[in-house]
Length: 368
Image (cartoon, rainbow, N blue to C red):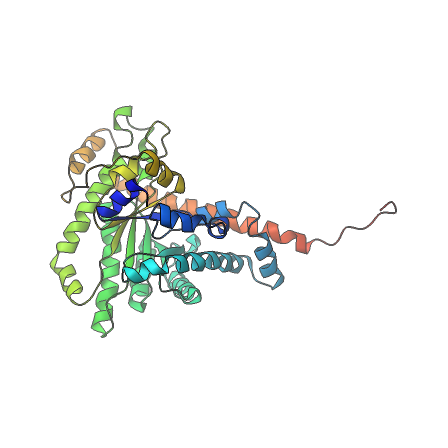
């Protein structure tokens, strides 16, 4: 394994890939990443799949499913599950060795369901059952309705990754939904060991305020928010409520750093990976960030459990006119809208690939 990535592992952090595509799988690249860079899981989302579908790797599968009468959304999920099940099988040895703490892949429900708890619950249960992989979890956005669904699917025993979290408060709401689901399981005499992840997005904070603050404040807000959330995470794990659940066999909800690609060309390409080193957390990174860190990344100090200077940094941003509570809500809503945009674009691309089957054959002319 690359020595810089190994150093992350040695300090208790695991690295997942924030990308999925059929060429990545079929070319052996993901397997190489697993060996060379210690990649031990991956995340997906509608934007990543929309990017993956821009090539021709899925054309034959799309047309075969269309010919079989599958609707557009069902075609997508069939293709996505095929890829993610293959990735899950690749990571299954890691999953087994870690007793389920690592080696996961994740699939997101339709972002159009972000404000529909009932249909999110149905979709999450159905997709997890279709996958038939113990190490495939379902991603659900941390909206109000999404969190209602999270509690229910955890109660049903479906592993879940709560995504699009941007603040300490949103993280704590996601953790609360997870714990309520586990508590309900225990109350009915069920096992408590349902795995969950909470994905805290980081770089979008800095992109969201870049035009509103002076250059001295660029690329500092996301890291401060992460540090603040990490403190809340550590305090939650030390709480009496969590200790009771842990004693009953519950697994801690893993904090996962997401949105770690640098969006500012003037900032180091490994900025967030270097700053978000925290024991017993996961970080999901684009392949460009992973290879950059392996080449020239520098190991930063571990994130302080007490949040370090995050509150002081946030106070300075407030003096600059940044309302972090309002911005957290805006970023989450924009995240949902962005995934919905990618979702529509992806389904349109699938429909375009089906069109050759729908067109009548061209009439031959007298000269042909």
